[in-house]
Every structure is written in C-alpha cells, then in structure tokens.
Image (cartoon, rainbow, N blue to C red):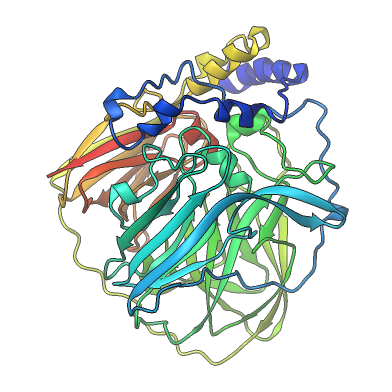
Length: 526
C-alpha cells in the first residue's frame, strides 16, 4: 500500500471519530505548567526536566462539530489601511526605544461580535517597527498572557540571547528588555513573532505577528515611496472566535479561511509604478503564488535586502515566513486583481481543488520611473570551510492504527512524526556545532512527501544550487534569505556563517511542524 493511501485509511477514520478538547484546555495546562521548569529557560539547559514524549498537552483539537463563520459576514472591499507604527520613545539619535505589551484583546472584526485575539499593544495587525542600520534597539516586552511567550526577531542579525529562542521564555506576568544593535549592510524586510516552546503556532494564529523594516540611510531605491502588504490568514467559528487546530492542521499546518492583507479581507489597494512594495507572508503554513493578471512584478529584494539587478516576474512564490520587495509594471493605468495561484504541496489526507485565491482589487497608476540597472553589489562568495547536513523527514509509522489510539497516544504519535536528522526536537540537546565567523555550506535535504520551508536563526544565507531528480540547478540570482522552500526529494546547498556565540534554532517554518519537533539546536562557539 502506498504511503498516501495508507495515511488516508488511517487518518480519515480517526477524523470521523471527532477528537475533541474543551476550548479552555490549553490555558489550564499552561497555567499549571511547572514554574520551576519554565524559570530555568535560558539559564541551565542541561537541568531542564522537559520530556517531549510526555509533555504533549500543547496539542489540542477543534470540536468535531465545529462550524466556521460564513464569509458574507466578514467586511470586505474597503480601502487598504497602512500598518500602525510602533512609536519610538527615544529622543536620542540612532536609538530606537519602545514598549510592547503582549496581551489578550477583544476586537470587533465581525459586526456585533468581539473576537479574542492575542495582540501586541492591542492591535491587529501588530505595529510595524522601522529602524535604520546602526541603530541601537531597546524594546521592553510585557507579557500579560496566561502563558509563556518570547519575541523572535525573524531574520535579524541579533545575539542569540536577544533572539527570543524557546530557551528564553518570558513567563506569564513577567517582562524583559530586548536590546541589540542593527548591523551595517543589513537593510531588509523582516518580521517578529513568538517562539515559545511548543506553542508558537497557536500564538501566531491567535494574532501575534508584526513587520520589522531595517532601512539604509541611502540605497538604490531609497528615493521611492513605500507600501507594506502583510499577508496573514484567519479562521473564525460561527461565533467569530478563533478555534483550536484540527488534526489536518497539525499534520499539514494551519491555513485560515480568511486571507487578509494588513488585517483586511479582499481590500482595495492603490498602487503606483514608482512605489517600493514590501510583501510579507506571515501566515503559519500558507504558501502564496502571487500574480496580477495583465501586470508583472519587478523583483528587487528578498528577505535580507536588495538583490543585484531587477528581475521581471509573472509570479512571486512565497513560502510561510518569506518576504520580498517588488515594484509593479503594467502598460497603462487600470484596474487589476491580486491573486494567489494554487500550489500543490501534497498535503496529508486532503484532496484539494486547484483553485485560484482572490486577494485584493488593485487600482494601478503608471508613473515615470528610472530603475537602476544595479541595485546592490555582492562581495565574492567565500569558499566554505565546513559542511553541515540537515535532513527533514517524517516517520509515518507513527500514523499506524490511529483509529485505535486514545487521545494521549495520538498526541505522542504526532510529536514523534516530524523529524530533523532522524530526531524530534529536544530542548536540552545540541544537534550541530559551528564556529563563529566560519563560512559553511549547509546541505538541506527533504526526504519527506511534502514541501517544508527551512529557516535558520541569526544569519542570512545564499542559495548556491538545488538538486532534484538528479538535475543540479544553480541559483537564478544572488540574494540573501533566511527562509527557503525545500521540495520533496530536493537537496539545497546554502552558504552562510554565524557572527555570534550561542545557541541558534533551525527548523521547518510550518509552525505546527516546528511545534511537533521538526527543529534542531545549533551551538556556535569560538
């Protein structure tokens, strides 16, 4: 029996049984979590009494009779609003100082009904952070949730103890100050989100995600106006509340039914050809294949900033957590539609129709634009001094007999399924070692049946080549990234180095897979 039919027979049977938990179950378990154990995070990893095979209380399931909100109740077609901006409280030059409160907020997105979100400063979407190369950043984070959290500065080159690793939790009712300096030559399009042990996906789908832009004082496009398109997705039940994950969500990653731009559903967006547009995919698991019929994208930047030369694209492919900078090119003014074409990533127990997703109406104005031929000059690639191999895989034997498992056995099966180098994540373990400042080539291999986006903390890498079905393909262009898709049976070669001593994470950025164990620890030493 092939693996796909095997999974369908087992998992569909289980799904029909309707595994359910009370909606309050997660909060209770997190409140009851051993505070001595949580307090050791970031201090003595070798003393932490965490056992993945026992602590599975973070896995919850939506009720079997869950009814979702009808899309007719979600307001749509409104003019796109700019993202709110996090206020700089500092009067000092080159210093960014701010406060973020992480809290529960009741927000009315559906008329007459308030939805409980997790928010940064009570806002959906979260406030955008904007700083410049060389700035000193100091952000006080107050956690008023009933569970631990962190803030991971995704893609930013910050010290490990400031990067919101799961080892450094901010406990419920506590606070901490993140402080770091933005390096030169790191201008780019980043974002921030929680990264606590086991519950990153929950906190993101509850609303915790924000944009973070690092600017250069002057670059090839700094004279252009800018616009942010932050793409998220949201699931609401018929009472306009955010439900727990289904089993399908845990297996494939959660995709909310409402895909939003800057927190709005199918908005109307005004764009011009002389605008620098930053696009963020801050969803937990949704892949985007963006296109505008009758217009082209001009790709000018990726996660870590500008690329060498502008590249015209019919479509922009974005994995979860990826970002780009683009301009829009069309022959004349007009009305267009922003869509996301279907991408088959071979989900488990799901048979999807290859439908195109409508995202927004665009009113486009063609303005004069003189685009530079060279956007950025990259230094010559350094030869690697060391090599790493990361193999992402899935243990489908854990799925055997699911219909006969009780709830605890099911949770244990799930946390043993998604693997890196044959292991499920252990907070106490060190999986790989690197030396600070040493250029390495990482060989990332996907030996599973579905796509997985690979992300590593603390650095930006360059794609050197990909290998699929025996064919090697060199990178199309030079670019800095921190997240990249790896297709089934594909092998990527990534060139990178770490500039800080300490512990780093690398993992699949389908957040449910990260929570279920598709993650590793890298220790960087002198």
